[in-house]
Image 1 (cartoon, one colour):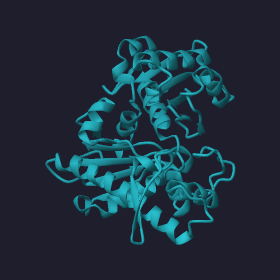
Image 2 (cartoon, helix red, strand yellow; image 1 turned 90 degrees about the vertical axis):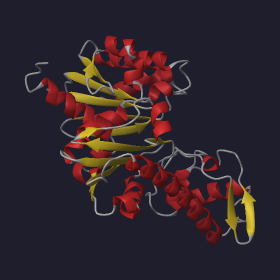
Image 3 (cartoon, helix red, strand yellow; image 1 turned 135 degrees about the vertical axis):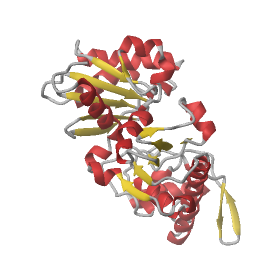
Length: 342
């Protein structure tokens, strides 16, 4: 069977099949909810698709008044492109359900992509205690694992924000004014503009942690994702342009932003690990910010001695960019079996 996993977020669409043919594209769902069916249709593989495995976070987009309405609209878009083919939706209860069942239990399918990834990736830690640190473009998941399965305290986003298992910070889309309110440059403490002048993408472009892409205009000002343009955006955080701010000051600003975000994730990891009876034997790291997740894993005192497993290296870069969609496709393929028997 050719099963395609679909991960529908508020800012990105990701597709993958169990063979690893994966695709990820920016899509501002909150701006263009009516265009979702067309966007999905344009991404689907040309060959026959037998079934769809769906997970989502896009139901939180503020174009929808409620999560239930978001789940309904997102599933309606998938049904449009599926044209009668089977659709199964992942729940945080650890199972696939039909679209009608998903609509009846929206809280279990809302923001469930972290759970499908942890369920699939947990096979790398089949016994004992593990931890998954997934740093994405917008959020960071810190998911405890036990005997190969997610063992989280929270299931909904609100519960996970409370438990520290969800940290609303990522390596691309997080506004810098949400990370710090001021920077220290020399002997001057400078307040920051509370504007979407720059994001964490600019910090990591400047620090060469994320590669430049002149064709990527998904930035704070719509100009290319290059290091020089990042410098322009960063200067505006202190209400300046690049004629007023030197490279050394941009370096220092980025150091402070990156350190503050790092500390925020470390604090979450510490709180999650502290609840376990024993430290993790293995730490899985993943996401578009895997480089940051790995730094946290290798520097955190509570994780010393744990094996660090890169899902990017395990899956490959293309699959890793759509890891939740890939996990959904693989899990549904395994559960239906080669003949498609439920």
